[in-house]
Length: 272
Image (tube, rainbow, N blue to C red; front, top):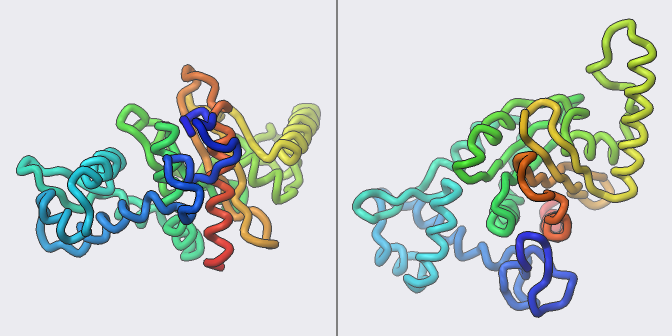
């Protein structure tokens, strides 16, 4: 499956694990298990490791390691030194530093393999959005260097109703659109109009299962979000793909985004 979600010589409906070219019988997230084996080896190492050492300790051929390390270094899970040796990168420490409840941190760690896969498929900003009161928090963000400014802006909690991820979570949680915090005090007409527009937006999101919007807090950012449900307890997070407003239509990655959300839900069923 390519980044726009189109199948290539396989059945139309694919899981996130199948989208990177594995057989249909492979386990969910299977292609990334090798990558996390490499991460575990680097985490346990007392010094940077050469490619040969990694190959021996991870029990992987060098050709496979070359492909894995390109992706791991791109997102900060590994760092290549001038000596051409490798060590653990800063991504996991950044993830830990995002703060939040233990439940959110546990969730973000469980879904990280799927976020990495989505990042590899789309090449866009990828994150997990969670609702905290009237604000949305993004954790586990993955991004290329060209998106660093947009990604840094997502580190701060943002008003939920001003982003695609937040609107999706508010809508599926059936929050009252009137519970907004951006209406001008005493401006009843403006508040009524805004509430009506938001209620219509929430209904559209619930019908489609997706939220697409330009961020009102981060200039030049547009987001597409899909909910991740945990059994009967409802949505717990939103899988989010972001890009600049000048990019090609972000909604073209909707299919692969849905596939990723479905794969995450499958994984969470056994974890909670």
